[in-house]
Length: 218
Image (tube, rainbow, N blue to C red; front, side, top):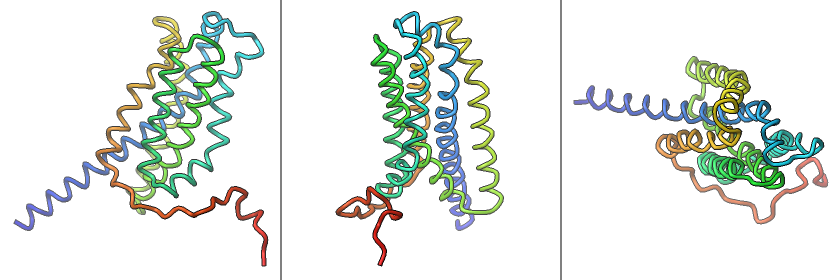
């Protein structure tokens, strides 16, 4: 009986960690994919939405600037309200903004939606890495998990250009954006099922906006 219980517990743990690993890699695939997949679709986007030559680059920059600029804030939020909450919230923002981008009828709406995608990515990526670190705290399993994560990151960047070209050629540039919606639902479902609920974290009464480096010493 004890052996059966131990086997069942080990099987449950294996399934849970497998779900978490898949969810984290799904997040990273979305992040790296969207850094590249839009590039090939830019000429079609410019024609369809009447982008000016000077504004077209913002379809790329809006995502990369908000993503890179808010990464540290995303990590801080994950530490404050919890990794699971931040990860799911980031995926929700990313999926909804991808839907908005796919349905955009003007340059302004598309650029704003791409900026929101960057906000979602900046929340979900550091949270997913924190989940990966806590799920695989040390040893061979952690090395293996981060090896898979690195491979997915490289794969997403490599396949992004190819996939963007195929979608633009045989479908419509809007599917470059809309594809993210069903893909984001997969890690969201796995995160809800596999990642334990966050323990409530007390929030400071006044946020430290300026940071420790600007705090008076003494």
